[in-house]
Image (cartoon, rainbow, N blue to C red; front, side, top):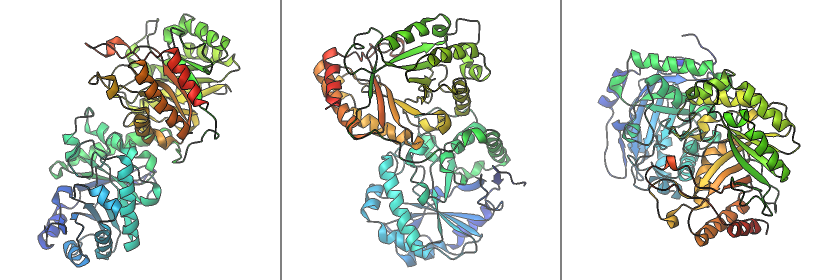
Length: 554
């Protein structure tokens, strides 16, 4: 097959070879030792290799073996398990069956077993690839290492990797997510990953109900591959359902790869996996409000104002009026642009494609023309919360590449305007980075922090803390290496509870100097979204907000 910069090397793994392996290799199942584990013997069906790390024959010449590693596993026992490989390369999936697998790994309980594993690996013609505790990001509890914090998984993986490499320098380490939404949160770092694997038809995903199913196999495989794009490593594609390994699957993988190749210049923008810039020590973030009733805008310490605008607001002059009023108060505008509610006869349900096709150019050029006249910084956010798999907004539940194209096109219309600060605005939910549009069009990453996460919580005191929410969300968007702007945050409840919650926010803002700005949402949410129960009211008193600002400057 002809090799290209982005190619797929297909080849259904030799089932006969796998059968030979299990026919002649002894198995063990003693507790705390080691045993073969057929549950993870997924078929190797392809390789997605942008930089040509693997030969085209990799799929056909690689044998996959899975074993459960206990804390008491010995070198001799492990050597017997491997038997004699019948192909050039060996892929070994290692799983731990302890209830506290991650904790015990971090604490060193597995150290001797990991060391014995590395030393017991056979010497072969090709290379040995090692996966550890795969499908960790799928939010189910099928395996002991799932539904754990990304930080714990990363720490445990790195611990395993360090001992593995020291025991056997020839080992190639494979990070093994399923390719589920949220994959990036568990990325352990380039220094401990030689390749990535994703799994098709894994039991974990069959169990999970958190995200809707993709409409077809091509879309599913393409999305899985896209979720690994920041790793910049070759991707091994495994099929957990051996019975479905067929020509149809080959064709689906080929089509998915072709789609990514078509958009490669767009989706493989360089993204630094680095620490974001931070505020100077002793300084506070920019403080602002979304305050349509103008209850807080006159308070000392308010420096910016957030407004939401749609197409009709630009068309009828309302945006220019509100924008001018913000400038008159000597505040920096934060403008969230919602590309819908057009007053002209145009198809509103295709707002992202309309953006790309230039349908709204007149409105967007007018927007940027108004902004250009100001000498103040203007933070411009386009089509926010795109990653949430709902349809509150017409740009949600859409293809990530379509969104990226629309975002980049919109921002290109404001290129060269010095006072425009480009804001990419996910909610900060699971899988956010799949929609990241590229370093060159993002100055700030914005997230939303609301104490009330869903409709099931009616007691205000049960709301999550600012810190708990922020820690989860920064883990999700930290890949971008950009300063953070919390363009929406709020808490409901009585004054005393709101002040307590806001005091907790102050501590987080002092500690996390990557946060450069934040805007309080001083209004109730949209009633239509909350169905039969009253919408949460994030409204806050002047005294409580003034106290918050005062605490920040101390």
